[in-house]
Image (cartoon, rainbow, N blue to C red):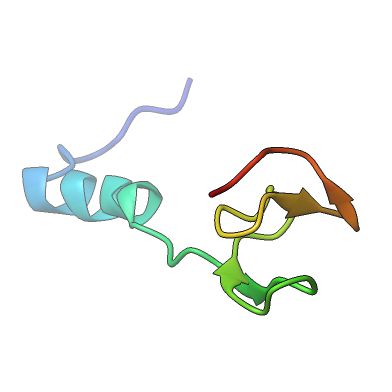
Length: 59
């Protein structure tokens, strides 16, 4: 059975785990209806359209 020869240090463990906790930048694309930035595959919060159909009523 494989056994580690030395204990893994706390800094090495934390630096390895920190790669998963990185905050990723939100992707934005232009809405084809109004031109405002919106997230892909989401209803536009400015005009309420998604794929050329009005989904929600926005004032």
